[in-house]
Image 1 (cartoon, rainbow, N blue to C red):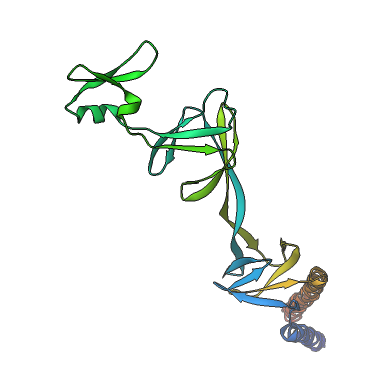
Image 2 (image 1 turned 180 degrees about the vertical axis):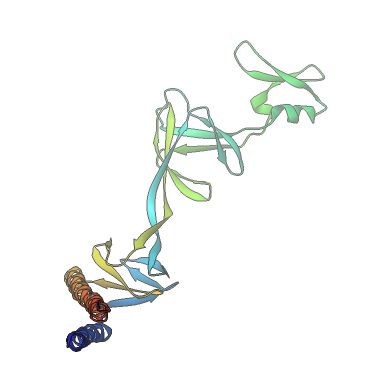
Length: 267
C-alpha cells in the first residue's frame, strides 16, 4: 500500500514537472518592438548633414563620424615655426601699430658662406648691431642684403596655408600671434543594447535583433517602448524562474519519495 501511494505521488510530481517544462519550452521570450532603421556593419546614414558609419559586431557597435572643431595655436615672437616646407622665424616689430607680423625664412648661413668662395666663412657684427659678411677682397655687406630670405607679411585677419590647412591670424600682439582654424575631428558614439544617445537634436535607442544588426529607433515614444520591453523581459524572467523551481522541486520530491518507498523493511 505504501509503495502504491508513493507511485501515485511520484506520478503526480512527474506530471507537474513535465507540465512546467512544456510551458517553459513553448514560452517565447519578448523582443523589442521598436520602429527604426536597421543597419549592418559598414552601412552609412545621414542625420543633420552629418554622415555616420555603422560598425556592428557581437551585439554591440559604434557610430563613426567627423565633426568640425575649432583649433588654435600661439606663435611667440622670435620663435621658429614650420612654413612652406621650411623653418621660418616669427618677427613682430616692437610697438606694432599695424597689427602685422612677418615670417622670415631661416637659412643655414654658415653653409651658404662656406659654399661661396668669394666671402669669408664667418660674419661679424657692427657697432650698430648689423650682422655683416666680409668679401675676400676686403669689402663688406650686411648679411640681410647678401642672403635672399623669403619673407611673408600678414596682417591680423589674413589667412595663410600652414600644415595643409587654411588658417587665420586671428589676433596679433607685440608678444605673440594667435592662429586659428577649423578642422575635422574623428568622433565615435558607442552603441549598446537599450542605451540612448543623441545625434543633433534627435534622441535614439539602440537595440540588436541579431549580433550583426542594430536597429536605431527615434521618436518621442522610443524610450518608453524600450522601457516597456524591459518590463516584459523582467516579467518573463520571473515566470520562467518560477517554472524552473517547480521542475526542480518536482524532480527532487519524486526522487525522495521513491527512495523512501523502496527502503527495505527490518525483520
